[in-house]
Length: 322
Image 1 (tube, rainbow, N blue to C red):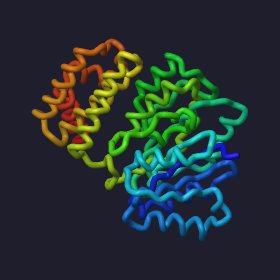
Image 2 (cartoon, one colour):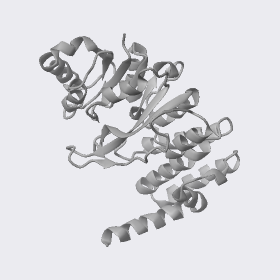
Image 3 (cartoon, rainbow, N blue to C red):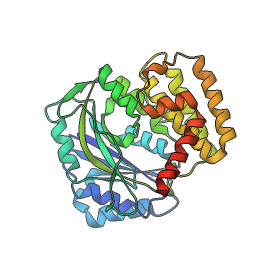
Image 4 (cartoon, helix red, strand yellow):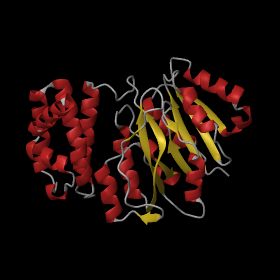
C-alpha cells in the first residue's frame, strides 16, 4: 500500500536535480512513491534523474514513476503528479530543493494511528550550499498533537500567509476538483488557502524539514510584468473571497503589500501608487475589515500605502550603513 506520493516537477535543473534526489533516495522507505514529471525540459535534467536512479539506487527503481509531458509550467506538472499519484497522502518538492534527514520517519510517526488531513512543517532558506541555513518561518503555537482547523488555527495559518505548496503533506482527497492554475506565477496562493478551508484537521511540526534553495534563475526570482500582474490577481482573488471566508482578511494585506512592493521596485513610485489606489478603491467597495489586521507592518501599509514602503526602505538603508 502506498501511503505517500511525492511529486517532483523537472525543468532546467541540471545543477540541482541530483542533490534533490539524493536527499530523497538516501532515506526512502516502503510505502512512498516518487513521481518525477518531466515538464518538457530542454536540457538533460530528466535524463540525469533516470540515470542516477538506475545507477545509484536501482533497488529503489520500483518506487519511482517517470512521466514525460509537453511544457505546462510548474502548475501543469503538479497537476499531472496529482492525477497519477496512488498515495493516500501527497506532497510537492521542487527539484532544486531538499528534504532533511529523517523526513519520512517524522512524517510517518505523525500519520501513524492518526487520521490527519494536513501535516505542516517549517523550512529553511539557503543559497548554493547548505552551510548557511536561514530559518525564515515563525514557529506555530500549536504543536505535538492534532488540532481541528477551527477559527483560532485558521487565523494563525492565514495571518502567516505561507502558502508554499511544498510546506506540507496533504491528504490527496483534498485536491479533488481543485488544481493549480496553469501558466500562473504564485500558483500556490491561488490553491493552498482553499485546500485549508476544505480540510478538517492539522498537525504542526516546529522543525525545518525542507530546504528551500534561493535560485537566482528561478521563475519567481526576477520581477517581470507578468509576475506583478499575477500577484495583482492573487490580491483580487483574496479580496473577492473575503465575503465567503473572513480569514482572507488576514492574508489579503500581506499579499497586497508584496504586490505593491514588487511594483515599486520594478515600475517606480508613480506606477506603484496608481496600482495601490486602484486596489484600495476595490477594497472600499468590498467587505474588508481593517480591524482584523494583526501585523504592525501590514497595518501601516494599509494606512499609508506606498509612502510606508518608501519609509521602510529608507530605514533599511540606514540600518545597513550602520
